[in-house]
Image 1 (cartoon, rainbow, N blue to C red):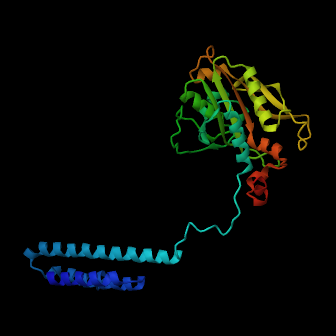
Image 2 (image 1 turned 90 degrees about the vertical axis):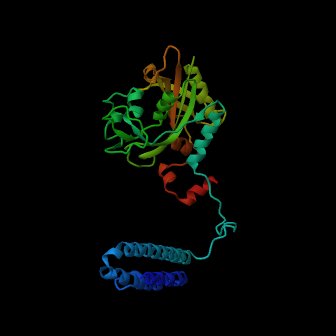
Image 3 (image 1 turned 180 degrees about the horizontal axis):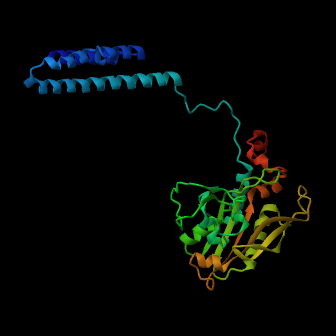
Length: 346
């Protein structure tokens, strides 16, 4: 029987590497290990072997079976690789020039975001990012937004019934997860992680339950700024925003502050900028953003003494700026992926 096993392996070692298609492989596999295969026939002889010889016989059969299975596996892998190569066709030369020589362009929202980051980068601002799926703590609680505030209602915010946390740190066992409504959550994360002074920008996508129309979208982009240091005042905030809008819109641009209410800044302001020198806008003053001095309650929440540290924060919609800069009348153009629209920004 040892001779039979050796002969089977010898034939398989000669035959299997020469196979070049799947039907031939399946036929060979059936001849060796199928119900009526050669190795199967040898295994069926176990009952005729004397009892004292069965352990040695069983060991020899198992070794032959493992060796034969390894040959079959290597042959199948080789044939599958050959079949895949045939489907893929000849290899591609990546050094050849592209058939379509049209160069791509950067998205207008990317252009505006990067320009704002570049301008404020000259004042020492650096970019920080955070997760789009957030907890109530970072989006609301740490920003002094009370539990009964309308922004926390289901009709305004996308809550997630269940969420694998992927590293998010929940402050409470029953805390809900949501799609962030602003990038102010990045400000809280930064102040908890980094000691002051802080001077950051937090651009990113945010989500609110809005019906889509020419000026609203349930998904849009914000860029927020935060400065925390000793002796920061409203004058610093006004000077920063004047510099931003004069760099974006021309030296003629001016800003004016109107008193407003935001839960996490005090005092708070709505900001208008003068646009009469921009023909495509056609208005003297245009509301553009919100801002204010960081509320002492927020500073205390992140472990900072309001008697020692002060700061300001501001936020604006990137789509709103892009629409005014480029004369776009419908926010939905940004998300339609229409190359006729996008190529205008090359």
